[in-house]
Amino acid sequence: MKKRIAEVKRKTKETDITVKLLIEGQGKSRIDTGIGILDHMLELFSFHGLFDLVIRAKGDLKVDIHHTNEDIGIVLGDAFKKALGDKKGIKRFGSISVPMEDVVANVVVDISGRGFFSGIKGSLPKALKNIDEGYSFEYANHFFEALAKRLGMNLDIHLSSFANTDLHTNLEPIFKGLGIALDQATQIDPRRKGVPSTKGVID
Image 1: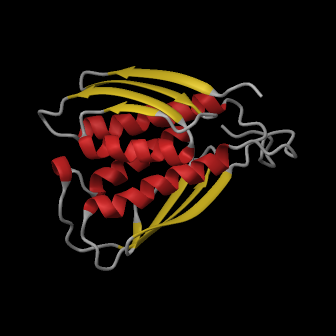
Image 2: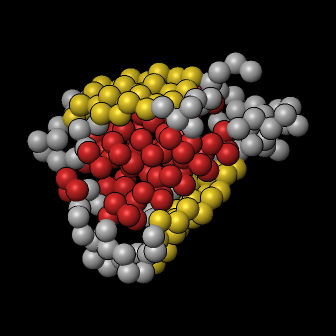
C-alpha cells in the first residue's frame, strides 16, 4: 500500500507553522511549538497513534498562546485530511478509554467529513493546578475544535476526573486516546473496497 504522507505549511501575520505527517509511521516525532505542555501532549499523540509527526511552529507568544495553539490544530487537521486523500478503505471510526491514575478519558472519532467538536465533557475538576505556560482546558478545547473541523472529524471527548486537579494528568490520557482512536479510524480495512459511506464520498 502506498504510504499516506503529507506536508502542510501555513503562514499568517500571527503564526508560521509546518506539519509533516506519515500515517503509516512508528510513533516518531519532532515537535517544537514554543508551548512546552503542547509539545509533550503531541509527542504522546504521535507515539500512541504510531504516526510519524514533525511540527515546527513560530507564533506571537509574546501576546499569548491562543493563535499558535489554535493554528497548530488547523494545520494538523489539514495534514491528516491531505494524507487520507479520498479515504477509500479506511475504517472511519475509532474509540478508546484510557486511564491515568484516577482519571479516565473516553475518546470517540468518526472521520465523516463533517467536523464537529463541542468541548471536553464529563466530570471535570473544578480547580486545576500546575497550569503550564497558561495552558488550560479552554486552550485544549480550541485546539481540538480546530483539528476536528479541518480534518472533517466528529470528535467526542468525555473525561471522568472527580478529584484530580492536575492539568497534565487530565490532558495526558486525552491525547493518548486521540492518537489511538485516530490510528484505528485511519487504518485500512481490506474488506472495504471503496469509501466507507453510503453516499460514496467523504468530503
